[in-house]
Length: 313
Ligand code: NAD
Ligand code: AOT
Image (cartoon, rainbow, N blue to C red; front, side, top):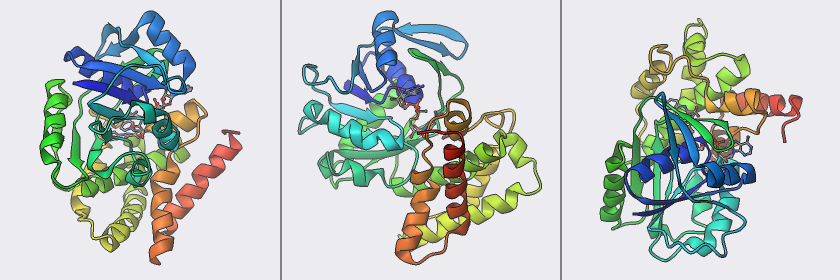
């Protein structure tokens, strides 16, 4: 399959590398010039489960796409949420009427942004339990395993969505066709809506946070706010399964020692966070629906305050 990875940071590099290894025709598009240059000069370099891997994958700067000759069957969006609109704008010359666009970003409501640029029937929504980390321009660290769920938004596009599932699974990305992707997106958003903000503010990894006597109560209150919004939107929400999944994040033998991406963004790399697309999205919906969301609101305010204190723009 001819695949564009749009946003080739940590996660885009993982997917690009694994799809390239599975013999797909892959190109990377990114806005970080130094990263693009490094990939073109020395290849995309990865510590891939402890093994040193170098993949020769063409990379293009997103503002210089007019001369790129590549008609993609599939675009996988992997920007940060606040970069999504600009990426979709840049991608316009690369999209044909048959190009499917799969969004795997964390957060809620990205379909509203994608709909401005992509016909409804071409949109696939997903979410993923894979992880990845950037080590510097052109270099990523990939370890552990993961999975992803996806579904077509447009009616009658199930076969295409299943074809994409097959291509991703052939690359060992463990993809599943979902029959209720919005529910699955809410589930992952609850993991991010609890772990990301709390670990970032409290300067802790997930295992240490989970071991405190306050974690259960804070997590439950936040999840109840996500549930109230999901209920209003008639999105199925399995509270117990979600709380169990969050508790799984405390396990130091699996991902408990991991610092969520928001922690890496704000505390390590002094970059803006995706809080407005996670807890902030719940606050906006709560205002619209007349539902109180005090925990999400306070978390969003605290993260923005920390961004300001660190002078992050
Ligand atoms: P990322 O920050 O690694 O990359 C996103 C974009 O930011 C890329 O264009 C990248 O080139 C750019 N970027 C990264 N570091 C930069 C730097 N120092 N200077 C300038 N530009 C830089 O983001 P990601 O972790 O790949 O996440 C993409 C999406 O996937 C997000 O929505 C995220 O929440 C989600 N996600 C991430 C993980 C994870 O483990 N990283 C897991 C699941 C979902
Ligand atoms: C995560 N982490 O999504 C991934 O850090 O933003 C993140 C993130 C998979 C399972 C649990 C947490």
